[in-house]
Amino acid sequence: MTSYQFPDSFLWGAATASYQIEGAATEDGRKPSVWDTFSAKPGRTLNGDTGAVACDHYHRYETDVKLMAALGIKHYRFSIAWTRIIPDGRGDVNEAGVDFYSRLVDCLREHGITPHATLFHWDSPQALEKRYGSWRSREMAQDYADYVTAVVSRLGDRITNWMTINEISCFTHLGYAVNADPPHAPGTRVKRRKDIWQTCHHAILAHGLGCQAIRAASPVPCSVALVDNPAVTVPIAESPEHVVAAQKAFPTCWANGGILYPVLTGAYSPVLLEQLGWDAPEIKAGDLETIHQPLDALGLNIYTGTYVKAADNPNGYECLDFRDSYPRLNMPWLWMLPEALYWGVRHISDTLEKPALPLFITENGCAAQDTVNAQGEVVDLERIAYLRQYLKAAHRAVADGYPLHGYFVWSLLDNFEWAWGYDRRFGITYVDYPTQKRIPKASFHWYAECIRQGRVV
Ligand code: FCB
Image 1: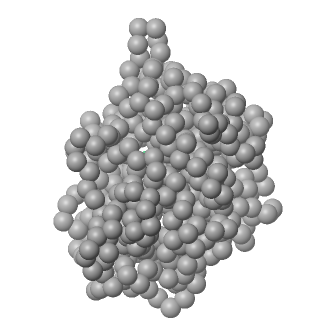
Image 2: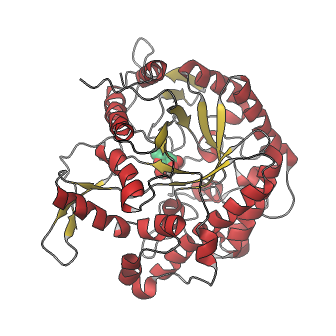
Image 3: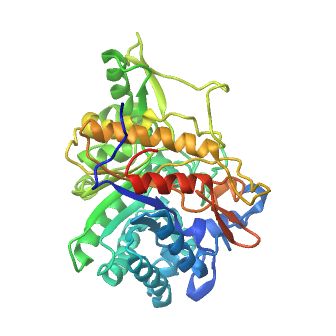
């Protein structure tokens, strides 16, 4: 019988992001990000919710760090808000904004928790949206790199795990749609599909420049990673023909071939470029070299996946749709597919031929219809069921010898779930927004026990 025991070196953590938890939107010199502007527009988010207060983590970070210590995590992934550090997007650094992260990092370290900082989790400066349309302009990549230098030169003595950018496909492909209102900020419709791919190209360029900026500014050796949410193709059954089909489908599924491929191999996937034709982005000489920086690790955010089967067609595979009766958590896209975590790891190691690249699951979790019962508890059975299956898939990857080194649950706290506002709860801690009370859910206690025993319980 498998005990699902992880090696002692396996790192257990939890993740959050600035705009989703901090609140204090106008404090200490912070200026608006595109998410402040987008969420303030009627009809853009559910119930008109915004991140203006969120979990008030800006004022309650000490309580939240104590919560992490009680959970037993030794690693915490959070993000830094560009507009706290450089409120206008470019130009003067706001030292009061840096101070917040400095205090947070000191507090984490006092509790024996290692900080892992994401430098960009979607909250682009509104000033740069106004100036040149943020990711529509190539200028964004250099402004991002300058911001990175400002952060790393100030906090790099105490933060040594850096992640450049979170989930490029979401704030580019889902931030600028051609014929529909995009669900993500800035919510601008661009004219052509090519222009969407161009925003994405600027973001991978920013990642490359960001890697260089981190390494140039860090006063001590550090780890540099990208966080991506690959569209994971999962063989419908683990037979050689379906495995090959899933591998063939990987580069053209969603944005994989235009993000992971250039970042990890130095070239867009040729199959994707062929499919895109005139819709492919303009790539300037030297861009691919800049984008293809050596990485110390890759973060994978994996929540779900796509089943693929071998097919008798020119591609040799077919991607399958889910029917309504397929098990799903409390989000339209959140199909229960734990094997995606295992196959996500395998596609990086095998399909992309990066067997030595250290991998981390930087996000995994689910939304559930959580309520506080008469005893004041939140018994989130479906979240435990979900997490248990995905952690078993992580264990399988480790047991098979793949370089999966750690796991961060999404999320430490219920928070502002973007266009879904506060309606969807992903936390292992319930947040009662009117009082800001934190109530650890049953899944919190379950995860604490997994960490204590170093295995899936
Ligand atoms: C990911 C995001 C994260 C959170 C989860 C549910 O795509 O990175 O901020 O919203 O989904």
